[in-house]
Structure formats: C-alpha cells, structure tokens
Length: 453
Image 1 (cartoon, one colour):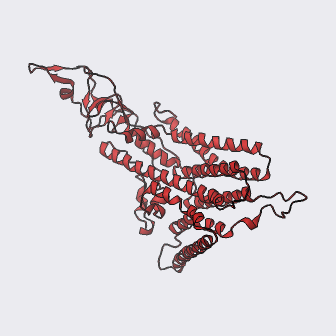
Image 2 (cartoon, rainbow, N blue to C red):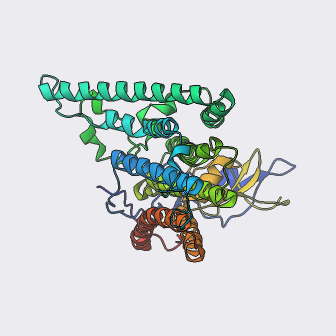
Image 3 (cartoon, helix red, strand yellow):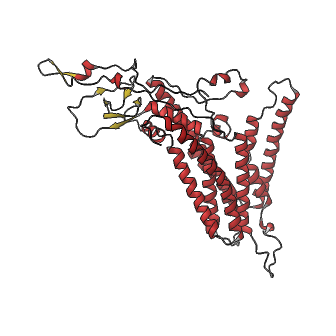
C-alpha cells in the first residue's frame, strides 16, 4: 500500500501569505502609519508539513468470520447464563437430579428464538459478502442467489414460529421485555432503519490509500462500496471536509458498537433472567456480573474490529493536518496577531483574531476553525496515534485481570466454567490489541519527534 510520506523539511505554501502591511501596521490618530513589530517572521516560512509514517499491512478478521465468532460467543454466554440459573447438585447422594441442569425448567422456544434473532448479522453478512461466480450467465451464480433467498426465508419463518410459541406460553408483560432494545435503537440512530441493513453502516467501511483505490473502479456494481481515503493536500477547506466525513463515520461506528454490544448482552444474558420462574433461587450478584462481563467483552470485540489500526492511522493523518486552536485568555492589546482566514494554513504558534476571541495555533500546521469544539475533540483523540489503542489496551487488561482474580477465588463449578470460557474469548481480543500496539509503536517511532506515543 502506498504511503503518504511527506518531506520533513520546510516548504513555502502558496496559500499562506504574510500580510506584513495589514497585520503588522496600524494607523495612529493623525492618520500616519506606525509599525507594530518590524521583526515579525513571515508566516509562510514557519509552516512545516506533517510527516506521515507508512503503516504496514496488519491482518484482521473478515466481516463474515468476525460475525461467526461473535455469534458463537453470544450462544456460549447464553448457555453459561442458563447454567448459572438452572444448575443442580446431581453429585450429592440424596439429590433427585440426574443431570447437571434442570432442563425441564428451560423454555426451548425462547432459546431457539434468541439464537435465531441474534443470527441476523451473520445471515445478512453472508448475503452481502458471498457472491460466487461474477458472471450472471453461470448456473452456480444463480444457485448462490437461490441459497441466499432460501436462507433468509427459513430464518424468518423460524423466527416467527418461535416468537409465536413464546408469546402463547408467556404473558404479554414478559414478552414486552423482548421489545426494550427498540428504545435504545431509536436513541442512537433515530427513526431510520438503514443502520440495520445498509452495508456501509452495519459494518466498517474499508480503508485504502487514495492512490490504490483505483483498482475498485473496474469492479461490478454489486461490489461497489464506499472507501475511506486520506487526501494529503494543502487546501484547508478540503481538510476540514475530510475531518467532518471521518467524524461522521467514527460516530456511526461507535453507535454500532454500543448498540450491538448492548443487544448481545441484553438478549443472551438478561432476557433469560426475565423469563426465569419466580420461585427459582439463583445467585443474583453472579448472574448480574455475568451480564456486565458479557457486555464489556462484546464491546471490546466490536470496537477492536470497527477501529482497526489502518483506520486509526487514517484519522491520525487527518488530525495532523487539522491541528488545534488554544484560546488565549486575558487582554493582549499589544500582542501582534493576524486576522483568521479560512483559506490559510497556519503554522504552529501563530496568533489569530477570531470573532470568538484570540487563539494560538497548536500542531504542525493548523486548518481548524477557532472555537470549534468538534475540531478540538478530533485533534485530542487522534493527534497522538497510540492514544485510542492504549485506552482500549488498559480496559482489556483490567477486564482480564478482574476475571482472572474471580477465577482464582471461585469454588463452585458453574462459576469456574463461566469465567474460564469468557476469559478465553477475551484473550483473543487482548492478543490483537497487543499485536497492534507493538506494530504501531515501531511504526510511529520514525515520525516527527514532537509526536508522543
């Protein structure tokens, strides 16, 4: 993949003009012109272009393999929750139980309904990404399309059948628990239904270099998809437009992570609690902890998949071009400054006057709008390339450490099985984060010395 490596030396930008007459002079009361500071350095000579490091290709999971792993994890945690609820002491000599679980207390239609419901992403991912032969004249092409239609039909009918049996067996009040995630969906996405099926919204948009994205032009329409690229240009309005695009894409990914992690934890671990018998006795603290551990585990799995290193590198490059403005407090009547212009690339340390006040430039170069909180948050999150990865790594270590501590302290068999299986799944997430952290730290070591890891 081509890199956007730029020379580290100084270069005079055509868009940056030193307004030495208008900015460094002012009129006195008698109409004469007086210089403010004859030693001011022209702004154009102070601009340093950002130096981008080349990030090597880091292998990751495809969407369909990730969805398969996520679905299997959801089935596992649901089974573990049923073990926590319906376990028996079959090994005791006077126990009336012959099995490890009281299977007769478990509603099979509810289990099948939850399994079918949570398979929606896996089924739809299969429909979106499995094409078979490219030519529509091939028989195999139409067989693949027929298989997709049959798969959707079977899953839909099975979901309706199991949902009907759940409604018939339980009261309407219990069935309302199955509709609670709709409120979360509306709060995150609004009334739109696109985030449920649109490929560029449900799964992360691929990231490519701008120069290498030409290979996508020859593809068929069925394969066409949006590709995120970074334009290493010197035009401020293009940079701000790119940052706005990245901001919307990043917010969409975070919303998908939050919604799907909450959905998995709710249906696979909390709904079995809602449908448990009122006379059933179980460890409330342990099953509640299992719900929280499931949510954190799925959250980390999703966010590592939705924020791969190549994507974070793209945001980091854009943040270097964006920069940030720091507001200068107090009165500085005698400090020389320039009038802010949206068509100017400002160097580090430049002082500009904006309608919101006096601001100082922070960053290699600055194209952000002074006082724009979105630009400030974007620069804070991504101008240090290791920040997001470090935060995720710390959270994962805390989760794994807490689960390992619980595993050591556990004495009941269901507790040991529950913690061990979830901990094993979190090890894979920890492995990917550690691998990304090591590769990124070595890659950005060659970047500008002002960048911190």
